[in-house]
Image 1 (cartoon, helix red, strand yellow):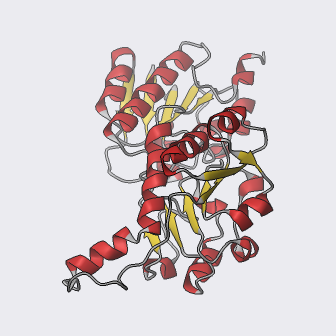
Image 2 (spheres, rainbow, N blue to C red; image 1 turned 135 degrees about the vertical axis):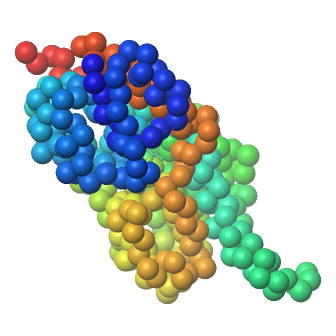
Length: 323
Ligand code: DGY
């Protein structure tokens, strides 16, 4: 069968696909437009896409042969899953293989922001370090502080468990009680308001769905401690980025560490000029191991889906119950 891959991904995934099918890969090192995706999808049975591709109903119905969409990401808010289901097309994602990489990055952002690592690096490189200074680069403590985890799915839970070495009190917000976290690190399920008011560090690990859009805005920033640090490695639109820039500028909070942005790849301009925010280019899952495993997992899902079997990480298994 024929598969279109919307951008080059690590070779082991492409090799797996090539063994069984014909593949065509976007030859450019850039995100394709919707028009280009539709054009390239003509005559293809499978679509392997990225989180940067908007796979809406128009794309999905454009090729009647389409039998499988494999997303090279755990988050799939870019895909109209409802439309795919209506069309009888299974959709898969890549959960599990990026849990550690992403939760590690949330910690890297937390420390970089709390201890002003990026700002201090720039300062040192600029030749401004004139010797030990009792007043230089004061940050906020991490050890023994209160950690607020918003969303305790795979990544949020892994992030929370990693706080053990820092002897932190862990508060969390989640739809369900997380018995494992409560048992292992005495995490406490609280209301969103309590988490915002009591946490020294708040880390977001929710999917982007209508109820999480702008979950953090001006009102929420005003509830946080002046010394709070906000970390986002989930999806950009979970934070109202304009409100974040205002909160950082007016020092309503101590700082923020971001891997994702509301209008990716655009970033609210003010953030670029602020020292109390650490910016990553949506690279939380970017370790050699994770990105390679994401590629092989996406390929395995594609291969199973094209056989007419339920892919291991199918998001819409109801497709197989229809007909
Ligand atoms: C995902 O897989 O959803 C991540 O955002 C990729 O970095």
